[in-house]
Length: 157
Ligand code: HEM
Image (cartoon, rainbow, N blue to C red; front, side, top):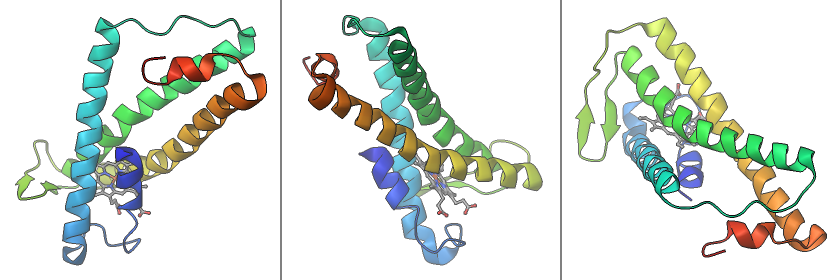
């Protein structure tokens, strides 16, 4: 939900998320993105401490695809906020959160900053597709294959 909200609230005027006019929208977008990062770190700690669902019997290719998609989701959830903060600071701009700014903590390198922000935007679009494929696969297990994979993904499963 946080990723979806950050995505939807990045779509103001295509070229002006940095502008003064988009200040409010940008602050909400950046706050949601920082929340995503905090929640993912907590989730990874939880995953380390708690048990993961038992492996279900399935063809090797399907297990490999599931692993790949799970890895991609975690990698994107970390890389998207990380590229945003790095790119913003390299561009010499502060990270703007509701009520306060965090000034750049690294030296300005405008061109590199722009490139990293392009990567941020591409990854921000890509995660919606990966999450969509992941959700579609979960529904396939539930309604077509009728195995227990969907239940094992649900809370308490
Ligand atoms: C999971 C979290 C995030 C997602 C899914 C996401 C997604 C996106 C997307 C899709 C865009 C392009 C919008 C467009 O122009 O069509 C964008 C732009 C932007 N994002 Fe994020 N973002 C996230 C987190 C962050 C964070 C944490 C920050 C800052 C700390 C941030 C700062 C920015 C800025 C400044 C832009 C404008 C870049 C430009 O126009 O060159 N984002 N984001």
